[in-house]
Image 1 (cartoon, rainbow, N blue to C red):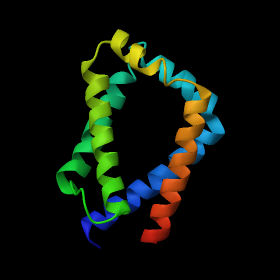
Image 2 (tube, rainbow, N blue to C red):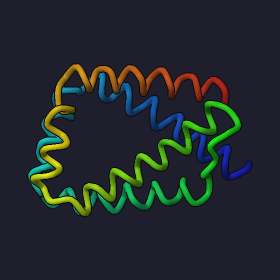
Image 3 (cartoon, rainbow, N blue to C red):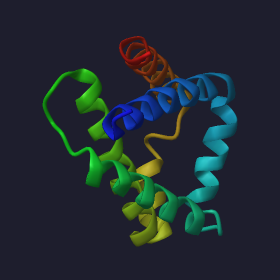
Length: 127
């Protein structure tokens, strides 16, 4: 199987599972996001993992044309890379300022619904 298809399937499943997790555990995820902005040790685990996963997608699948599934996969790769860099580089006060307006249940519900819808659509196209 071609690497691009494998990455697309991984992203589709990730979005679907992540969206469901957010919808079920939104409040817990909000608390966890608050802890990350406090500069705990988890930051030094999350940032490198996000950077590495983002780089894998960006370096092997940096394609901005070819349909929704292709572009969504590239977007997720860039989003992971930027997220990892921001978490790694910015001071905790800046991370807290960025997260404060986003860290509410309505935002998480929207993100969860979008994750489920996009992940389901991508899955239907790929499997």
